[in-house]
Length: 312
Image 1 (cartoon, one colour):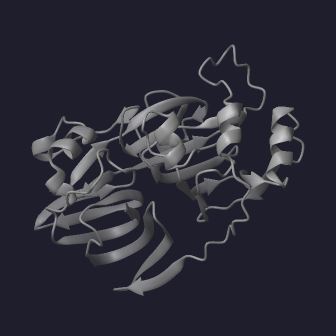
Image 2: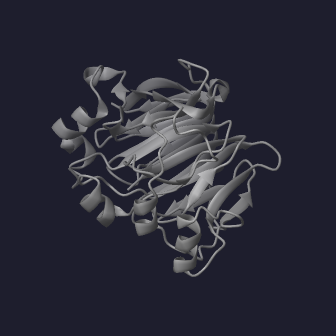
């Protein structure tokens, strides 16, 4: 039986109510993030169906490891969320696993990726730094000299970006992002657009740690996703690395789906239809998030659906 999850909403100074358009029933008008699949202590999603109904994902993970192929990790390894940036997020950076383990009580580091769901014309993200070498960039940060420091990239709906740990980044105003990441909530802020920290006490800067972990990268933004047609459905492998594999499916009609791993994370971005698992029919719509476990053997998607599936 799949595990359908109740999202956890986080209010943000830069948030809004745009996620209502994507099927989310928001508790306020300043929601910045909807955590769709998460076992992280800062946002534990609750199971809403089957024998585990009412339990949080972290408990099911800990007590039923066989459902996840006995995956060798104490904590659930991945997280997915929708991000509504009605104002720009802070410019920040995430640590890798080694640094987070030592400095953040054994947490995962945070490599992540963004699928651009929507973006107003001319909207931009920050991806990396324009200044090299690293010591020059660190000097500018230490002196709050941010002119031309951050590399900006104009984005359009349907684009995809991989943000490895150590990469300075930010989502700009007017962008809706579907995000998949390591299960971590550690960010080190470098710049916050001079938002008054007295008004937002949780928005302090962490320059010392940021300077420890940031890296000057020459990453190619064009990941050249691998696209193929399977049963007349479009499958796009967006990225595959040591942290996660992300695949987008454009489903029209019926897709007989074979899980590539013991468990996979599934998010319905658009459309509606059914998922039939071992003969049981489940209605699905945009904003639904669920996990196919090792118990789910025979899976069929039906309908007009845009789906993102992620796994280790």
